[in-house]
Length: 433
Image: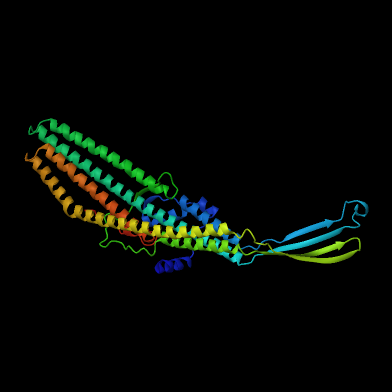
């Protein structure tokens, strides 16, 4: 608890990094083109993501509420004319009495300071909401960027499969011409090539969907960039840290708890009656005299002492305490799950890379070469080819799962991808096995 409060105090001392976008800047929104990197994408998303813009306006609205909460109540002007438009001597203004009076309510019990403190905490909650949403959006960007990299690799993989299937068809055609195998095997090889081509078209379609999903995050419905650049095959030797003290949701819960306490203080202060001081000038037409008037108004809190408001605020404070505990448990559970996903996907990547993939390639090469000499049948070749490309596809999926799990761990522990997530920025993907 002390660690969370300490972290909260440090974070509250810093201003929330909410970009203020002018009209001119909105008219010149940056469009990403050519080959893009994650480092180029993140700042553009921070400025142009619609969700973040909406949250930033809420923060500004809470700032306005804080300003309003600290204002002093306005004085009141009272003008009263008595003894006019009556009967007898009072049918005109000769017997009238005119009173001009100002009154000012004085809030006791530090009501204004408490109200301003509560509004300020509400503004800080909106700031935490923005920061949480900011981290969520950046995590979505990192994952979407990873999916684009994976989709690009799968397009390359299927293109390689089409080339291999075409070469294999040529080899089968030669054997058919030489009379070593039946003509049906050429038809089967042609079917295998057609399937590979359909797989390539499907991979290209998934790439376009992944590119569109990424570009939507900075406000472009249709992507205008050509490709994404990053080291998709890089994995870390050590899993990311799992320290919860920097989690933004925990900081937000601590601020929400402080806000509920401030609301309770505001409701308690309402039980203290306020004074209204008044003073003014009176003109007596009958005697041609002038006089000053003054008064004090004190409410008598005999029946309504804000009992219901105080009880409501007290119950909401208890609710916030339980919500904070529940949030901490949810985050801890999510973090443990994400960390286990990192460990599992990391082991899966290592296993496929070190054991499964080399074995599948070796088997495919051996069977393809053996087919030329009649040692293996066509079905053996097609089966080994299918297995080899399935293993490569599984390897790409495992890498994407690993990168996404790392992003989840960093998101839950409060690591900012904008400054620290450089996993996919180490190169251009030359480390592909």
